[in-house]
Amino acid sequence: MEQVYELAGGVTVSRMQPTIGASISGIDIAGGVSAEQVESLKQALYAHGVVVLRGQDAMSFDDHLGFAAIFGDPISEGHVPDRPQITPVTGKVGSKEGTACYWHSDGVYKPEPEFASILRAVDPCTFGGDTSWSSGVAAYANLPDEVKRQLRDMRFNSSLTARMPKDYNHFGDGDNWNKLHEKYPPVTQPAVSAHPVTGALALYVNQSWSIDIVGMDEGESAAMVAMLTAEIKRPEYQCRWQWQKGDVAIWDNRLVQHYGVPDHTTGRYLERITVANGPVLSIADWEASGAKVKVVA
Ligand SMILES: [Fe+2]
Image (cartoon, rainbow, N blue to C red; front, side, top):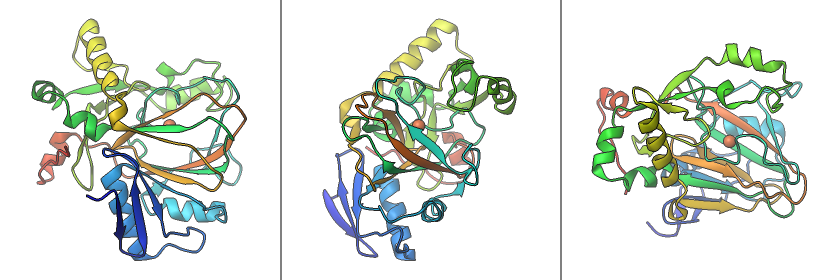
């Protein structure tokens, strides 16, 4: 595959790194996205895991919502009045609070975690505050065969409130913790996800949300989680984006993990909309659908 290539609808794809990421030009979200461009965007997203469009300053909340709906059903769980689909993404200077500055996928603690996340830079940090993504597909592909065999049917335990101190206010005030504890009971997720469209296999164990491995003793489980979460930190699987006002990033949580670099030198304000597209499929789930798994080297 070329580093820069064209897709239908006048879409140009410029790959960021050999294993992950692309910037896309030729699309104006506010002006309307054609059916051809929708197909091209999906093709690029599934091939590269994360794609970024620059210069989308003219877009409104409605444009953002309509654009997100290309990739799945927008999730409405936020606290912004009249716009419950929005999760504000802010960053205080010097703050390392929360789970964003650990490698993770979004919503892993839910029975049906976020499929894609669409993040719009309304007022980004002027220096620092980048986002990094890492390819779970490349990380999985390069694991030894013996480890892949171990991971095949492996699941991990996840829980929102197990990871959230009671005084952490990202999801509301401290009193909200009990409500969240009831709303999001512990779940298990597959260690390896099979992409629902392409079948691509990706490492889904992640530092933020994988508490331990189902059926393993504590020491063995901690060693396995540490080994797998170290893999995702390899720079050769990563790309990193320096935000400009008007940028829109779309990433596929079944293919990549991300990390908010906590080195903001100014405040910032970005808006995220996430979309659902069913539960995370294990390799066995995917095979049961009659399809062949795809391991991308
Ligand atoms: Fe996130």
